[in-house]
Image: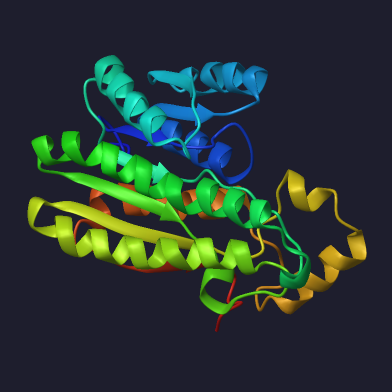
Length: 248
């Protein structure tokens, strides 16, 4: 039996990068997949076909996770279309990197809204159906930057650190209802974004990782599958670092 057979998962920001990798891995493991995208309409439509090829139900929703009302409407639509929501993966996020002295209020607000408020929005919205089911797994995508900080990313680090505190609080609040809440903190993951960087910079990053390679979307997706599955039934309130040993 596949690890996520019979489960319905909602994944935000799944049209590319880590979210895309998670969506594919979830479908491979038997989950029906609802996902969101914001601007990549063609990629969203293509992903539906890729997921359906695994023999599961899939649907993409154009929705802004940072919008409170839109998040509530999204979850209602997913429950209507799929009948349930067993797993929520809060993956949507952005960067607006610059040194604090140059950072504008807009750059701060955009990152906090897209990365942190979105997690509040979707988690609050999905709590109602999960409470009715008396079971659920909420997985929030944090970052090693939220644990150790990084120059030029004070807004991003603050948002990702906030996710960790939020995750632990939700775990304490909802544990008695059999709803689990965990976070994943990826390290240097090679995606379309890193492909645009200078090769020497990327090589230096790889060499700084104990496993001597960058992570892949599949590496993060595998950890997400574990936390979504019944294999992790006694795990909640935790942060799983997927970083190749960066934080060791």
